[in-house]
Length: 356
Image 1 (spheres, rainbow, N blue to C red):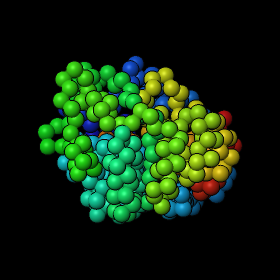
Image 2: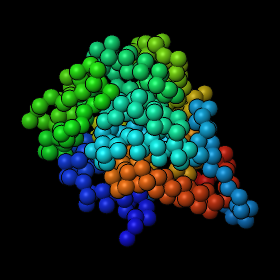
Image 3: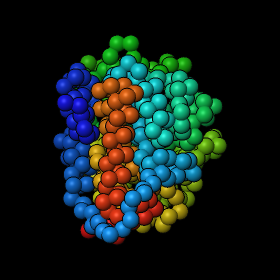
Image 4: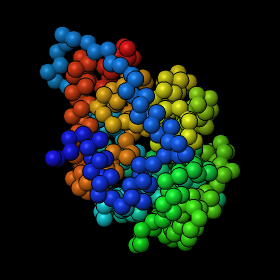
C-alpha cells in the first residue's frame, strides 16, 4: 500500500535501507530518551479548536526572515542524503523548491554547495559547522554566499559529538564513493578509518572546534553579509544572549536527540524561548514534528516556522525527489486540515488560545 503518512514512509525506509544507514538516520544519543521525548511531547499537547467559523478559504503561506514560503515548514539540515538515494541533496532541494519551501543544506552534504544551488528553485540556507581551521570555515561561508545561499545557520550544540551507540555498534562509515563534498578542496572530505568507533565521531573529534564560543559568532557575523541564525538553543538565557550578538533568528533544537541525551523536548522549551526574545527575532523549532497538528502546536506556542529533518530523508529514500515531494504534500494537507478544524483560515490566526 502506498504510504499515507510520515510514519508509513519511515517503515518503508527501515525495510529498504541497509541497517547501518537506517540506524544512522534514525538513531539518537545513548538511551535515546530525548529522541523519544521530542515526539512524545507533541502527543501530550491538546488543541482546543473553535467552531462556526467560515473556513471555506484557507491560506498556509507565510514569510520566514522576509522570504516567502508556501507554508511554515522548513527542511532542517541533515547530512549525507546520497546514502538515502543516489540523487541525494539534489532531489531534496528540487522538491523543496517545487513545494515553495526553504531548505537548509548541511555542511556534511554529499553534494557540493554549488551543485545544490544550481538545482535550487527556491531559497537555500547553509548550515555551518566550525572547524578548528578557521580558513576552512571561512571558505565554506564565502562559497555559500557566492553560490547564492540566503542565510548561514550556525550549529552551536555540536562542538563535541554525542555518543550515538547505534553508530558505534555499526562502525558507521560513509559507503564507498561518498564523501563530505563541501570539504573536498581542503582534504577533509573523508572519515578517519577508526574501526573502534563511529567514523563520523572520529571525524568530528579531529576537525570540529570544541572551543567555539560567542566571540566566534561575532567573527562569523563579521565575515558575511548574510543573516546568521544559531541552531541548537534550548535555554532561554542563550536565546537572550543571542540577541546581543546580532543573530537573525534562533532554531530551538536539540539536534534531533542526537547530542545530549535527557535534554528536554524542543516543544517543551519553546515557550521559554519565545518569552526570552520578546518578538525581537524569529524562532524556528525542530525535533519530533511528524504531523500537521504538530506544526499547528509549534506555531500556537510561538514559533514562526517548524523544521523537519528525518521525514525528508524517509521520503528521499522511498522515491527520491518525488518521495520528498510526497512528504511535503502530506504535511501540507495535514496542516491545512488541522488549521481548518481549529477554526483558522491563515497562519496568522494560529495562537496560544488553541492550546488546552
